[in-house]
Length: 357
Image 1 (cartoon, one colour):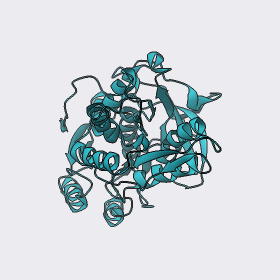
Image 2 (image 1 turned 180 degrees about the horizontal axis):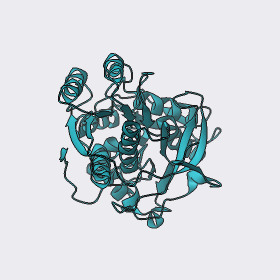
Image 3 (image 1 turned 180 degrees about the vertical axis):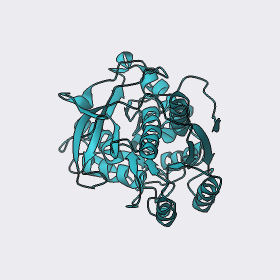
Image 4 (image 1 turned 135 degrees about the horizontal axis):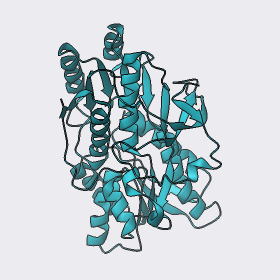
């Protein structure tokens, strides 16, 4: 353990809600989980409070690469990295590849960042394996590489700021399995895990399927696709047309957001319910209004903040937690009134920011 990783007694911490408001200068300490040993697939989860540096010793130049900013989830991560860069006093350049089909573009953008003099690189990876050669090359130059949100298989990264999407998917599936246990009437679920090949998608899919195994939940063939709204809307429409007995739509936050309007337009309210396996402002509002049953919250803003702090600590030779993410908790129609929205989502009307000077 380091001075940045403080053990705390949090009985049942996964069920706790982070009530503290997340002001730019006071978002911490934040309940989190570290994995020991770091990067191990079978590592042990340790409950911690995450406490970042007060400030950077110099204005380091940090490059951040996202798959896209077409949905509010990545907008939230954008808010997190920008806010933490400003708080710590470092420079930042954010690039986005415009979609999960654009791996070559993401690679090219990161190469350009490094050529332009980036001191550290934070990557929200399009592909679990497809960036490994690039990461190896960047790390060989002594440039810290932080894996944020999505996950990569590279052993050459410096740190991971992410949660278990297996757990996110599992919690979503467990909700259905508990509602429809073995022996009850079978229900059909349309399942939309996201873009095929992305590490977070495969992890969420495994978790979801493991959770519903042995229950009365019958999962239709997974419909993979980019997390653009138009793509997800088309997939949902296809499933509702092909399988009129669908009882639930479960999948990405974009899926859930798109499904709300489709369910209303088709007059399926009360017949088809909606779940997401992660949180966005649209999902949060949908839960508030009773259109979405619930979703796990992974505090994407905090994941972005932690990634920036990890990068600065690595650059300055400070101790850091190599593998950590915020506590996951489920938000539903029963507890949403007790959740501090600012702790898990970007402010209303936040627009993308690409540069901090």
